[in-house]
Image (cartoon, rainbow, N blue to C red; front, side):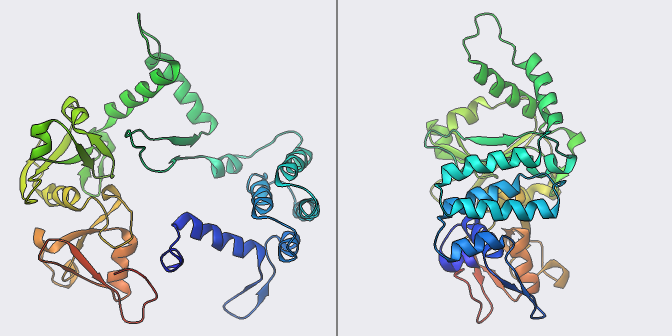
Length: 342
């Protein structure tokens, strides 16, 4: 709601909520007043001595601090950093924070919980204009060891190989993922095999130009799609680019119970709630007129896609959905709802 009302993105809304929790007093449901999580930093912030970059340095310090550091040391460290922040630039404060982190953890000891808290992978924004994507991985020791072993074999240069070291590792990861897609041992995701589901139009296929779209929202050049005729299970839904009529659903084997979901992924590509960016792979099939448990029919004309959160808005919070004549899904909020969704 904060992101919608203020028209900011969700990460920014989360940062504001976190900043408020750390820099302002809070009130519990029973009326008890709680101090800010960073009380000395909050005082310096209220007095106007800090820039937001100072706050980010202090937040990063505590985010990376090991769990074994005691509460007394944590309190002293926060007081010290807040005092230094009153007189230093953010880059100078960062050096002080690094020294203090070394002082509190001189042996560099980190527990399994410390490492598990930091691990992760995420895409850094959307696709670039050329279709390429940038990702960031923070690997725990075991993942690093596994990748090292895989790269030693799959990324070894071949004779007359003109690829760079980074390019060989990229291609090795692609081979690894491709070898797993469609494997029955992976089980199913929301009733479908774990594989690619791609949408395109007849006109783009005939022209050999343009872009196809996956259920994850990734754009694939048509030339790459044509070359992607690989020996693993995947699905290709073809539409008429003018009328939107479904023309063809190609698949490697018959899955009648999954056909409807595949076509919903191809048509909507993700959650249909306005403003929601959850992609098709992570969305659920939603009955627009009446939920299945209340007697709704599982007809393709009465189905759409909704993420788990928005599905629960209909089930529990009074939202309503209906299909428009053009096949799109209309979301209606309950009266008095503070939201910009339409």
